[in-house]
Amino acid sequence: MKDFKVTPWEVSGSIDYEKLIKQFGTSRIDEKLTERLERTCGSLHPMLQRGFFFSHRDLNLILDDYEKGKGFFLYTGRKPSKGMHIGHMVPLTLTKWLQDKFKCNLYIEITDDEGFLHKRDYTWSDVQNAATENIADIAALGFDPDRTFIFKDSEYIKNMYPLLLRAAKKITGSTVKAVFGFDDSTNIGLSMYPAIQTIPSMFEKKRCLIPCAIDQDNYWRIQRDIAEGLGFHKTSAIHSRFLPPLQGVEGKMSSSAGAQTAILLTDDEKQVKKKINKYAFSGGKDTVEEHRKLGGDPTIDVPFQWLSIMFEGDDKKLAQIREDYTSGKILSGEMKGILIEKVNEFLVDHRTRKENAEVKKMMYSGKLAKKMWDTIHE
Image 1 (tube, rainbow, N blue to C red):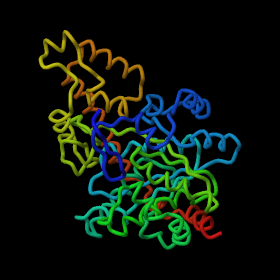
Image 2: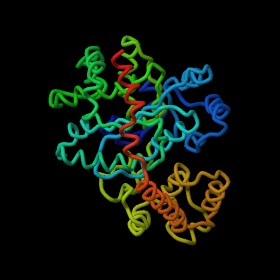
Image 3: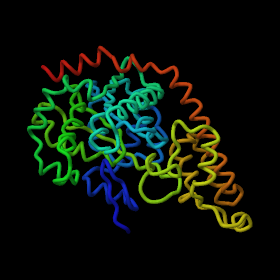
């Protein structure tokens, strides 16, 4: 097994998710826990049912609190970038499902400060323009506007500042160096940033659940070290794998790594078709004759993986596609065609919802902003 690296800013190598569970000290989402989720919710999201969300911290305690009537709240976020892609939709999609099922409050942090500090080539204007576009894309997923508060760090830092100082006082430089790999060349703003990202997990006195990709877990390890000393719960989290890049190489999808890795939310139908046909890694055989005889391998076929993760929620349909592909009935080009149709349907629908999203209502949610203020300043 080759070495791999997983941090909030870099994911590389062939990722061993079982090894990550041990390294990060998280727990596997096992059959017992998924059965409990299904009993509570009445159904399971396909990404949970199919094991794409694979790891957690204290998800059992979240369900305990819910069953006792205490409830919980959700927190997720987005570092502004110039182009959101399909992979960015994964944790947001599950977040919406959780909000719909549990009817809970949701805080979405737009980390424009982190975007500016981390991206050397980003001006402040670049970050703000990207943030505006990203917020509209997030709102388009259809979160409950009465239970959702989207905020930019730069706008709400004054409200978070008292609790931020209390948190920062408990986090040492040696801790962030060890957890994030910072060194003497890291700018001091970025060294401070991990303290900021812990704060929304303490916006209410209830337990917090964070749906995220596994590369974000570093922040929650720090939060869990300091939360109880500040009078809050240790945060809970539920972690996803990475949606594979189109070309199926190691690492994760990245809009900055070149057009061949990602489908952007702004791609039109022709661009989607071209990218998938040209770049999507196939599990098919080299010739039609060989493929008809031996079939394809869905475990390495990127179009099939995308279908199973995000674009085909019907288990029976997915099983039929898998069977037809492994038997050679469906060719690689036909598998790509199925994905192209599904992705374009998603993007057309997304753009329509984006035009009608209640962005202002979610960004200026007086009820949740007041709850946040009251919690921090009590």
